Image (cartoon, rainbow, N blue to C red; front, side, top):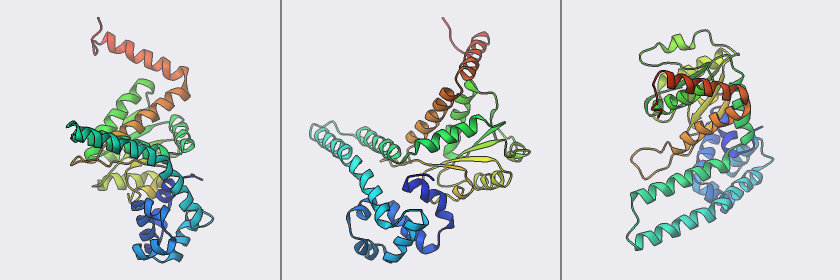
Length: 287
């Protein structure tokens, strides 16, 4: 069982009743209030009964609501010092005339990374890497803003494996990429709001075919989560007009890094062969 609230919620969200979803949404949006206020006051503010929050905790395999809340308190406690230090630094920079959008964006990205690491279950990440590294084929799928991240993931994977490929690229049929996949294969999907309908449908089809589905998104409301075998929720907060992909890039780079460390000599041999071929083909500048 995944140990964090975020991973438990992402796995169970689609199966919750409307009332429990409302409670879960409130917890996800207001962790400080939930951690610091009484259950009665949280219920009054959210419009959800105390009993519903208790049922939500049990639905997520906590003994009771207090156990769930204690997890939130622990995470928030770890973050407070980091947040305070960043706030003080930005305050000082502002008075010195050095604060800018760049500073605010940096602070948001740092907060996102810290939040993600606080909630990351390393065992789940390593298990996903093991399953993917053992797959016959690894298909990659992203759409809209996530397309570039998946292209980058494909580029990194090409150095250490020869069985990773884009499920749909440059006009290629998505159905053609999905056809014939089964329990021996894996599909890695990156999708964020607004969700691409075909990406959601591809996740559902892959699940039906027995494919091991790894899903990377930024909200527990993602409709593809219920079709996933492994789920990663990445924070994307930013002062930018567009949500940040910094943590997403960190995750896919970490995924490939763990994969290379697990596969050892095989991956290193492949990397050396690819680099040698690149030099022969004059794809890279080599003095």
